[in-house]
Image 1 (tube, rainbow, N blue to C red):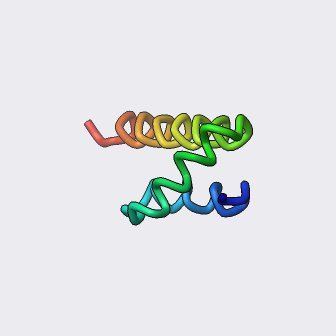
Image 2 (cartoon, one colour):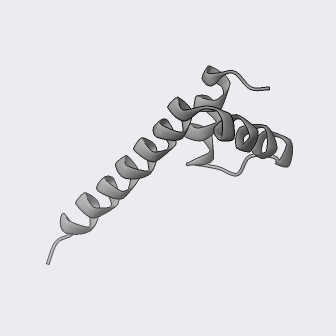
Length: 61
């Protein structure tokens, strides 16, 4: 099973590029068992959404 450190690296990496099926499967298993990493994934999603909104609001009109 993945450690929390490995899971956090994969979560961050998966925001930018596809990860392999083995890594995804290991990450899914880890996320089922680890509340801290599930929270980290939610935080990454919120940051990504905020950045998109900021970028979209900052476009010249």
